[in-house]
Length: 166
Image (cartoon, rainbow, N blue to C red; front, side):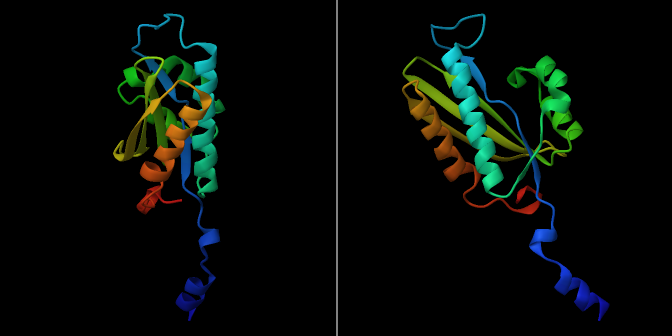
């Protein structure tokens, strides 16, 4: 009888949502326009735009977003993550995340860009999902369309299972 009561009292709402950390998308500029001081202001804004879109869509899908600020100094020291040999996993663990999303925009030219992401299991480092989308044109609209495509067709479809499920 106690077992039946326990089963009946369990509800999906009682299950804690999977904790995900979405790190800031980074820019790798391999175009002839590379500036050693870093990305141009409009590209920084677009990186923020697509990072925010990724966070918003994951939260809308039922994930619990992890706040980055407690590890801000460690993030600043470790970036760019593409050069740190998975050092962001230690940061994600310290934040209490179960999965992480890292992203990179490669600028080949002002017309040709590529948006990439990886979703990884924080405990093991295993890549659970990854995707890449080529976009044409360096505009807010093209960047948002690229990340939206990746979210719909690579990240959330088919639905994630196991501990990566929301």
